[in-house]
Amino acid sequence: MFEALSDKLRRVIRDLRGQGKITEEHIQAAMREIRIALLEADVNYKVVKQFIDRVKEKALGQDVLGSLSPGQHVIKIVYDELVEMLGGTSTQLLFTPRNPNVIMLVGLQGSGKTTTAGKLAHYLAQRGRNPLLLSTDVYRPAAREQLAIIARQIHRPIYEDGDCHDPLELCRRARAHAQLTGFDTLLIDTAGRLHIDDALMNELEQIKREMRPIEVLFVADAMTGQDAVNSADQFHRRVGISGVILTKMDGDARGGAALSIKAVTGQPIKFIGVGEKYDALELFYPDRIASRILGMGDVLTMVERVQAQVDEQEAKRLEEKLRKNAFTLEDFRDQLRLAKRLGSLGRFLEFLPADVLKMVGLDRLTPEHMAMIDDQLKRTEAIIDSMTPQERVNDRIIDGSRRKRIARGSGTSVEEVNQLLKQYRQMREMMKHIAAGQWPGVGTLAQQTNKRRKHRHKRKRRRR
Ligand SMILES: Nc1nc2c(ncn2[C@@H]2O[C@H](COP(=O)(O)OP(=O)(O)OP(=O)(O)O)[C@@H](O)[C@H]2O)c(=O)[nH]1
Ligand SMILES: [Mg+2]
Image (cartoon, rainbow, N blue to C red):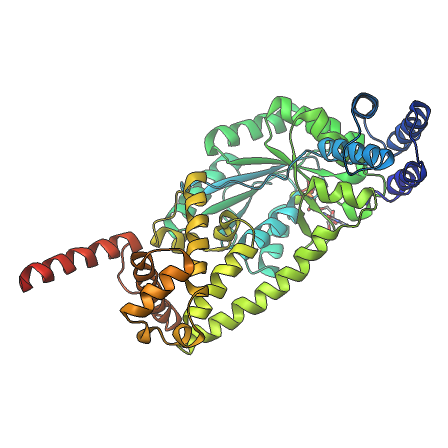
């Protein structure tokens, strides 16, 4: 990916870095080089012009930032603008509580829709969702069979109805089936055409109107460069897309499509396909790609990959403990740390099955909720940190005076310590049932706590 462009930009950067003092001529020369490099990478010429204008304006107009040398400063500007050109921030799929959430994959023939449908189903299933696949390609012989084969390979279900040859009717039936059987996501692989034509667009419009998808993702072959950009633009004007999946990035050395799509269509790239295998789908991170292009090393991706392995081992260890019914306060804390490492809690929740979320009453999370929970996590961790190792493995010894000491040590209150111990015991109980394969008839955790509170009141009153 981006090899040619990367080579040239790195050379420009090396030159800039070497300069003790940066003059206007240096910047002009660097911009000339960058302009040629971008055009050679097949970036849309308007996008190139915008890019160069912005970098120039910033580089010439601004005061030098404190800790950066003039050369570094220009590099930083180029990096920032490159991130911007690639779409700014990464955009995840946002699901709603109304199931099934429908995702449509649209695009020209051979762009990779069917393969990507399989990859996406696999990707979402790994993150705790329960997707159902559907092909509405009733035109090309064996098109539906192709998706069925992929579905079998990734062990995901597909909705099949060989007698129905109407795309819209297929969608309705698949949705009804998903509702009845509890699928939370419906992934629709639509038919492609060699060229954009009215019949195809009408069909997509109809499906979109009927199915109200949360995402209409335009699947484009990165190797087709500016053609991919133009067809994305046309699909967007006609049908309205919410994002792009660029496939075959593994075979695209230039990167023109990736660098132009956001600027031309206004729609972000959400995923990239980097191979034919079913796990060859990656979330698109503009900042990481930009640093990869500029040779700053894709440190983030590497860190995350290592982290994912560590986290997986950690999760397995905790699961093992649960099964053996040896879940201590220390494990409870480790689990919280794991949650934190996975980034914000919001991202952590993505990994949990929707059913579990609903059970604890978290199916609708606002940013305020998340901030509150994050804060709560910090306090909880502080409390457990203030316990002695013995207390952490045996919560029964934590009596009144120990609770006072722990509260003081963690800067919290005895009430909070009590609350935490209660939560921990509740969780241990719940986990025990889950590990044993039983599913107690619990409501939400909040309801449970309320019930207990009422019980306690009654008991107290009785005693009096
Ligand atoms: N190298 C590589 N090949 C890919 C990628 N995505 C898809 N392909 C290949 O592209 C070819 C076409 O993929 P399909 O998924 O059949 O494309 P489609 O858009 O469904 O095609 P139609 O249904 O005919 O419109 C297949 O050979 C795929 O293996 C990718 O990210 N990298
Ligand atoms: Mg197909």
